[in-house]
Length: 171
Image (cartoon, rainbow, N blue to C red; front, side, top):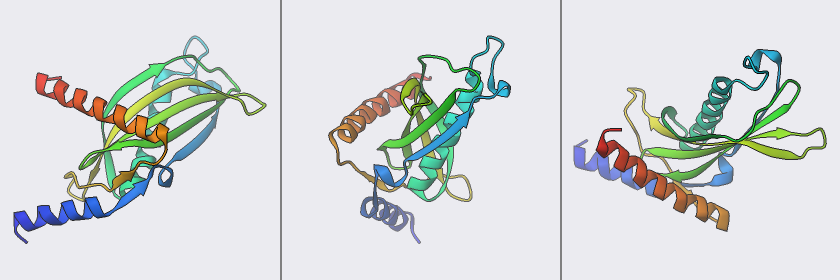
């Protein structure tokens, strides 16, 4: 197949297939144990980053139905800590898609015994779908339905433009 036909086929697949945000949304719960703590008795930041990457990977794999790789953690804001016996909930969802990349928002909460959740972290992770040779491949589009999904999409467009500008500047 010629290069032109291959590219046309890729574009056709991407724009024909679209998925909803909820189709790939993922939630994972952890019980804070001493193994996850830093020297101050709080959740070790590196542990949380591992969990965030894992959740973002699952969301991206569900959306793309392909292998993925982490391209970048665009934003990671530690708002509060967590300690032993806290219930930690991570919730990930697609916010924006490009041709081969997907932006995943991962919110991390501490959940009280009464089920009330308090945000302790928010991260935006960029994942790229890859083939068996680790080359980027097109991903399905995203059906944006609610006002909050539209706002996330618009924010994703802005973050995408900023990432592109940083790459051009050598960051």
